[in-house]
Length: 246
Image (cartoon, rainbow, N blue to C red; front, top):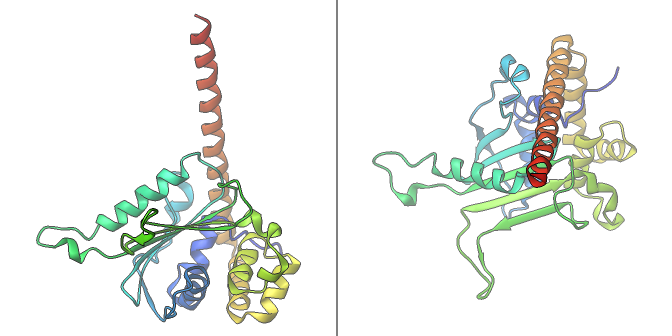
């Protein structure tokens, strides 16, 4: 049986956004964030994977949760480069940050927000697969506060990493997400119980006829959206050339 691809946001959320698989998301987040005190629990904001999401190309299948340390986390996976990822992630951070500001609340009630973006393309021109951004005073080398934290994980750069950095939990997770059939993932399964469980979950999902159909629909819509964007860009260039010749 051919396994579904975890890079499809529909499949990704089914694996990591299910209450029954909370331990998988916790392990993944601890691998990414590497806090001094490990995250021991979280509360999902939305675990419902509605069928209409698979047929709506404009829906965003991200995972939102509040950690045991009261930090809000947003996890999103992106297959294609939309040319606006930096601005987009900052916008989503701001939207999540301000969501708690309601009438009668105070600024001090705003919670720290961490955005984690898994990218199936290269965003930065270097070999680092993990970039972390915060608010920071370059001159004084001083943090503004810990309320903003944005991560980018470029999984296509896995092969560029030194062998000394490959035997860790984050590397195991990214290999599983990118290519569950790979030799690297097989090694990860043998040493990481959580990745082993994730593979079991993926196998069950892949054997479900309805899930395969919904995942296929989602993939087709993403491809259609990318095609429309490319067409619009080409049309824009053509119009620009026409105006330039006038």
